[in-house]
Length: 159
Image 1: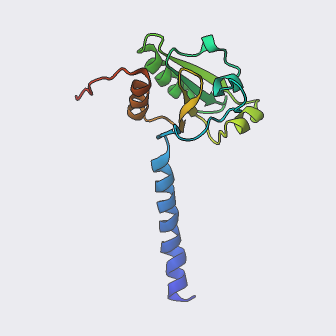
Image 2: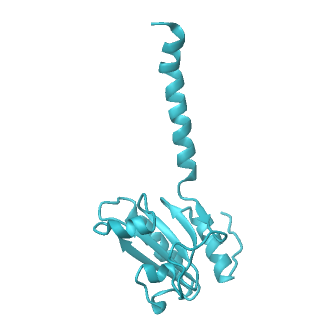
């Protein structure tokens, strides 16, 4: 075997695979806002993403609703649910957390383009998606988005 192909196969390919993995991992958990992109729900009438999920207006938070897509076999979902519920509790009804189980609902997963669990949609007061998080949310980024939507700002605490 020649030296160059052996070097590429032995060193180069694992380095490329590692770089791709690091890049993919760095994007996981980030809040992607989509204020400039249209809603995922149909655009006819008063349709919203909340309506597409079957959520009534009174099921939504006053300012923000965190919709967590989970499955029964997701190992990270219970911890994310506790974290999101804690965030919602700290906002006195302005923020609500709703968990949607996709274990037996592939059509809903396709409808909202859920490729992994947990996936979190951040809905505004009208039920339209303003943010999306694939994977375990980065709490600081999510808290900043919630503060922007609720117009309540907190001073960062340093330990």
